[in-house]
Amino acid sequence: MSFDEIVCREFVELATDYLEGAMPEPTLELVEEHLAMCDWCRDYLHHIEATAGAVAATADDARFAPAPPDSALHSLVGAFRRRSGGAGGSA
Amino acid sequence: MLPTRPPAPSSAAHPAPDPDAALLDALRAGDEDAFVTLVTRYHPSFKRVARAYVSTDAVAEEVVQETWLAAIDGLGRFEQRATLRTWLFHILANKAKTRGVRERRSVPFASLGGEGDEPSVPPERFQGDGAAWPGHWATPPRPWEDPELRLQSLEARERLRAAIGALPETQQAVLTLRDVEGLEADEVCDLLDLTPGNQRVILHRARARVRAALEDYFEEELA
Image (cartoon, rainbow over all chains, first blue to last red; front, side, top):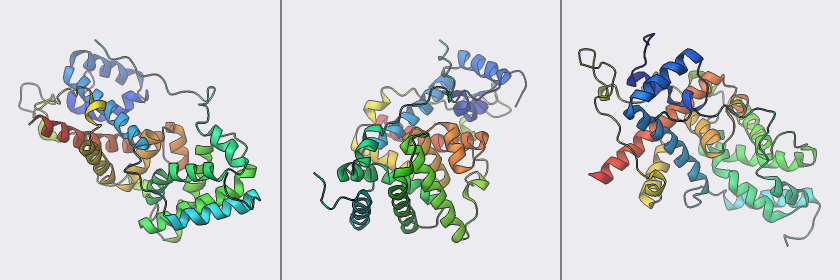
């Protein structure tokens, strides 16, 4: 990496460090100078943020989430019931 | 306009509230529906994290099962110094590591998820050394308009799922804990025995690959 500027090829490797606030001050200044000038790297940064957001949204997407196997769930509920000391089913 | 500087990671002085607090009360009251909700809710993430340590999906399922049995046993001793979620992930990681050792698997995170130093963006998308602006974009990314909206289609969500599923297991584990479950970086380092730097490298590789898949999808949509 050069010492006086960051180029786009270098920035794309630093996007997560930047978003995590995990960048030493000299590098942070170079990154912010670069971002101030480079629309494309701002677009790339936005892509990474949007990607993280899209991944987060998969948590709510039950359609794709593998459910626990019925037999496994059944035996776990049995173990939970014994532990809770209740003989009856759920209300 | 400069993008706003991201906020500093939240400090231990302001712990996040436990998202499962209501469920925890119900569990302690023996509510089976709450238990089923919890097991179902965490199943995909538990399986992905377990899978980083063990060799097959079937063994990962067993690790998840052992985790819940241990959690049922330990619930009475859980003191809420951590969130329920963090406590559960700790049990899971320990069970998965033990199982991985028994399978004589190498430590998965020692190799940074393998695959060498893969660049986040293919080198041909940047200008070469003889060009006017070496290292600057040759084929720049296009802005994404309303990605949340465009990612709501069934096809988009399938592509996203496939991209995540195609990542190396270690990358899936870190991406799941950070971006799906929203755990803090230091919690993930602690769970997976990662240095902060390695945690960020793995997270960034995962995000960069998924970003590339989404970019392909958006470009196809425009074509």
